[in-house]
Image (cartoon, rainbow, N blue to C red):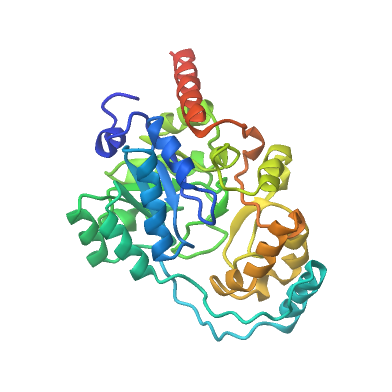
Length: 356
């Protein structure tokens, strides 16, 4: 499992353990570097960062490590920024703003960062890995990355998506099971019925594609990593497990909530962004649930709730924060990221040894 692995060999890493790219500030340069220094692959979740912020973060990572790391972006989606906002949705959002004592009906001037400009920085900085979510990368960009020697990883939530990604030329596939925290990577189509669990999804994708498959979703410890390999994956990607690490940029109350939540409280919602995502259930998600089918699509809803999420964090109001986490979140640990990587390795070895 550890020697001659196509993922570790290709990426030049010691352990087939990848820290998931969690956008929104959780994947700090310190976290990414710590994972890579310990022998795994740290990944910068850069989707919400400006091109300059991406460049600065990459430089900060390189100041901390000379080991390989990755950068992840969201593939842009067509949307109508002029789409009308339902009156009851606007009223519900303004009710929350009044509770937080922030201005109602804020003007939204930007819905998403410019993907082409973000990718241009990646091509200039040349990280070892570029991964993407929510779709397929265009052929020109894919070729440009490969010419620079960058390994490209796409995200699939179904076999159909995995087959499409392989056909477009990616080097590896992250198979995202329904247990995963944060946004669903679905794109054929983006719908909650693509909820295939990791244990069912990984072997089906492994049987259909010829490129390495990375298991993602609900993996928190050595037991999950060993299971991923038993299913045919050649690496495991963990996100929530790293959210509670010391180097994580997650809000302290978010970290605490992960440790204290239950498996039944980790649910899917469109409330915060307009796209299905898994997180810890709170008042905002409950409030918006009756309106879920009237919410604007991503990234419009994401932009409309940005002020609410920011104010909630500043005011220590978990009721209105987006606290993304996977279904196995309660297994989270308070460790340094490097220490967690080494513990995961030892746990995996023990589990595999016990099965011989």
